[in-house]
Length: 40
Image: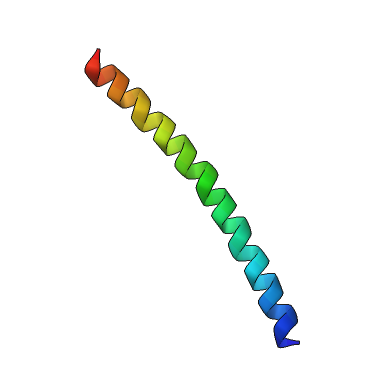
């Protein structure tokens, strides 16, 4: 029982990490656009 719960928690955590990665990518893109505007 506990191992099954651990597996589901692990999967949820990995999904969260994937979501955070895509969020970070969007933020990085936005920051780069800001920098381009500042340099122009």
